[in-house]
Image (cartoon, rainbow, N blue to C red; front, side, top):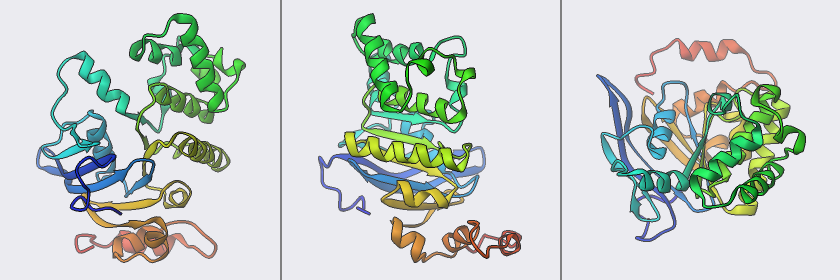
Length: 279
């Protein structure tokens, strides 16, 4: 992975340096740094409480860092946005897809209307063009006229996640942050969404920050992996390096937790019960 020291001024992509966030006396994120070059995919991995979602929320502006910087194409995104126009401009750069998209969808609006509403907020397209563009976006994520005319409650979990991806793509972001975006889906549906994301990245050159606790899906989505434990980076490298030859004890233990042939839960519980303070 490119280090922040190696990143030249003007390099296309995201550069995060020394990101720090506390809540009361709890340090959620502790001096986290990484880069996400344009067109690449980085998996941010860790258990619940590792700080990965807090990092994601700081990137999109849902949380304000106590220290550190977030730069996109050399521009500092760390200060709070001033004014509606600046907030919308920043939102168009980095979009986020959550684990449960149902909460972000208006239950009273059709799927097509939900996507068109994003276009109304961020573009000057007329109503007819917005509807046509919404149909194109839904088609890109594998949804047709029947799904477009439905309300969110009529869709499956996988279909709702496709809607969320279409809404995020509507503003043509440079980066898509996916926070446990396939965690609640059946394995077969996970595979479909991961394949869809791979196709979109190949076609558009978009960058992904994939936030997950599930190492089983990382190999299918990420070029690089960054492992967080208690808010700190404990290991980083290419996906094949980290998953096939982990150097840090914590990463090794995360991999030992992934169910596979011959796997037993007892091995996992034995290390979970020990103090991880020395990991």
